[in-house]
Length: 53
Image (cartoon, rainbow, N blue to C red; front, top):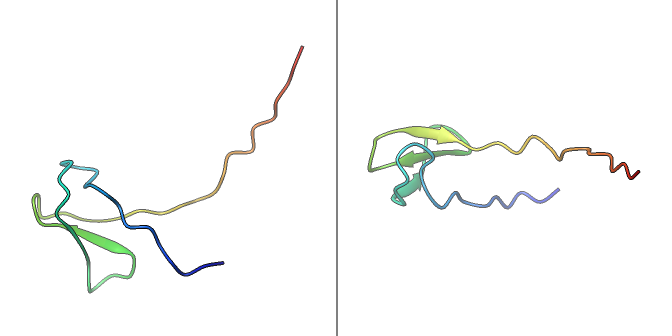
């Protein structure tokens, strides 16, 4: 699995784009507009069964 991670484009709390990686927590991002630190985690894909009548 690749170690390259996509960066979030905007803060999920305030919508601003002034984001920087947080140095104290791996994978965390700092929003310099609202002063929040957050992480984004991919947990998996939905396994949806397709049923047709």
